[in-house]
Length: 172
Image 1 (cartoon, rainbow, N blue to C red):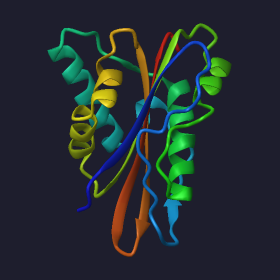
Image 2 (image 1 turned 180 degrees about the horizontal axis):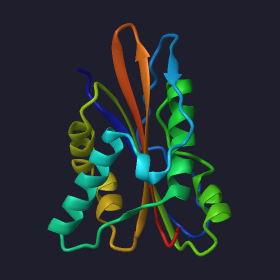
Image 3 (image 1 turned 45 degrees about the vertical axis):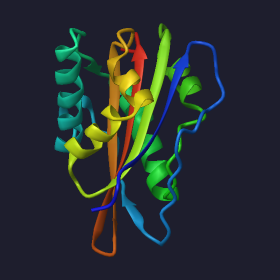
């Protein structure tokens, strides 16, 4: 199992330049397992587990749970597909514009992205929690919704999970 990698960018309502915290490029030819974006009620077990870990941790810090947003999920899923297809880990440079277009009352936005070999959702969550910027997004009181989407990439008998967590305030 390889070492998980991650990047994150917190954003405010005013458009900010994309900040890439880390970059991972996987070499080789592979095709991501691409599925149509799924409504929140039908999230993959992997994504449901990540949402559980996020909300369990927020509860332990006396913060309200985040609601899974279908709008944020669609943005996150498209970006996870893009990263898996390109095999390149980086923040969505258009994320803030996509949220503004889909969430008319939004006030704050943040994004966590990561790629990990294997299928252990808890391992990628631990990666997020051990990075100051990722942890800040997960524990930011201001955020009320999250879209968590992970795309699977199979190559040469290995599985890589490409994960995106898009956070916002007031994006229902």
